[in-house]
Image (cartoon, rainbow, N blue to C red):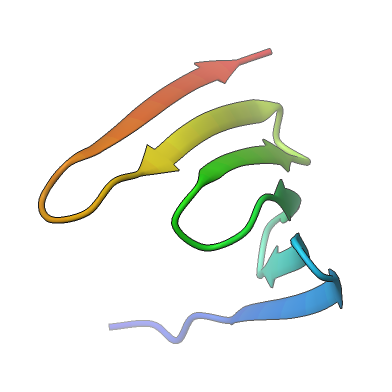
Length: 62
């Protein structure tokens, strides 16, 4: 089993910079509401966390 690297930095309230060994991404949105994530690999994800086991996620590649 290999080692992995993952780190997340809060830049501003509601804005995070996420790093891993191969790419980086920016996440916009706070807790419990809508999120938009754009990755350096071209993936764009929109998600909405809802209470309980419910949630919505839509992903697409450039």
